[in-house]
Image 1 (cartoon, rainbow, N blue to C red):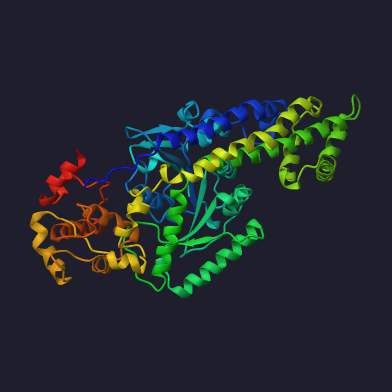
Image 2 (spheres, rainbow, N blue to C red):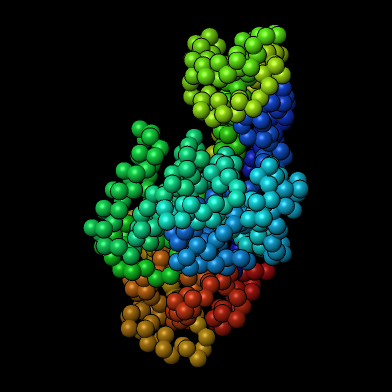
Length: 544
């Protein structure tokens, strides 16, 4: 049985595309004219383009140096990528966008900003200092068919805080934070340190906490007492930085495909990793919802911005004392925000950061500001009250049909099983009813190694020439490889798909495990030269 990629239902994908196209049309028709009229892009983020709506979900991976960012990405895509380096010192010195492409290659930053098919054109204002440190790596990888991943430079520690990057690092992070679907923030359980640059990076993420997933990495390298103390210190520090009543969840993990060290919290690491991977797996299914949410958030900010600009315009004198009045209005901006909230019924949460708005207003000519235009405001109100509501039925249809949508993991992302395969997965907890029906499975290896593997096979006491799932699971777990990796090996080895492993299939499993322990990448699909001889005829007929 060959392992094929799960194909999506075209009708369902069409429904998702309809939602995306409608959002795009609403933005160009309702929102963009108001943004241009009130010069929204001069105060906040640039206007959206087609690529911002059409691009795949993006995951931003960030953290201090040596927290395992690049290793985590390699863990997700199960292969190296051009330009990746791993080490205890700062190794990633640029932003790298990993995207799908039929041919492997690197596109430099300046070229990316002129490509209308890439969602990076609005990065041009950050200048050459940043663009020289930005690149896109395209590669034919199945995971990247569903998502794109952004690798970032390591955040500087306190010892290196005086070094200058030459560009506004927090501003770049905020640009990406606005556009990505998920932000993975990694911390090292060995060295938890909050530097000045890390605090500024947190400031850039404010307002996007719903996208943030914090991971305490390398947790198998500390004992349970140390982990408890580090976890508590991290939660306390995050509470001080984000200043929200809700506590951010911190995932405990050891996110790489190498064997983990046995520790008291080993099972906790496995459960936390599965939760995190499930969250990433669901990103493509929730992509349209995320885009709608971001559009609504932007529309509410545009509405508040229009009222602010209009108020400042009305308060400006016609001829005399313009400059002094301008500075007085900027100083009184917090009071102005309160007046607008009361007079225009605009929620306080829709307003921009007052301090940043004051800084941007200093360089503006208030005489060029414009008063409220009723037709534009009516169009914006219609967007928020009616147009968005009309898209909800399509989103609900997407939720009903989400099993047919492409998922990031989809049974091949680190070997995570599709729901219909759970009964055959020895690394999932089964109900008692399923346990009674559960049988085992074996895998095949190169003939010259088979006598050694057969000895292990027969020591596990097979029944009728095959092993049970419980026995295989216990033996595989002794290798200390992550469950997600073992599950992938299991799927590759159960060639005939009968939920059991004979001596050839078991030999294949041991061969793959030894290869993984030696540092080799696992194949996504079983190559023909690894298919056990007794299974080749049935596999060929299945493919036909």
